[in-house]
Image (cartoon, rainbow, N blue to C red; front, side):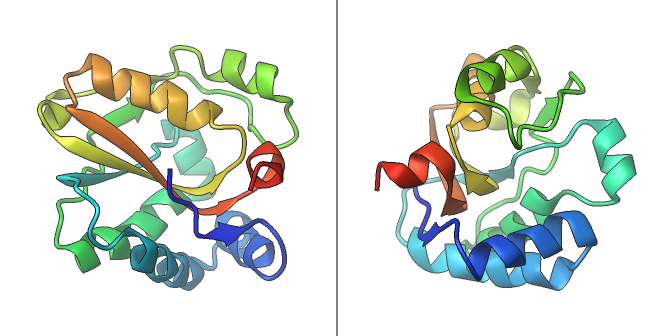
Length: 163
């Protein structure tokens, strides 16, 4: 698990502006900050945490993909934007306690054949309890991924407390 920054000002403000206010240029900036912490990792591909299609239409973009794009480009790795899908329209994770986050994401992801045999770096904006990354990693491994690493811009919530 790599998360080089803490979920506090100014990182929290940058992620929030990117995610909820469409400041996509900040996704590129956050991706470059994450890239610096990921150089030299033994992975074969980068996969952004997918949004459910309804959420993608609502938001207009996937903030994890905005962060993952410069990471993949900087590491010269393929970006598997369609390597996994979110098949359940889950409630937003923000504000949910850890146990509800896990239940919320049970069975939410399905991965495709593009991940088989590959070491995958899952990229997200913030790592809080790990519920999202655990659910997605389970789907990737079930689809034959050789290994899964989680890379996030920042650690927040209970993950930050354990730093």
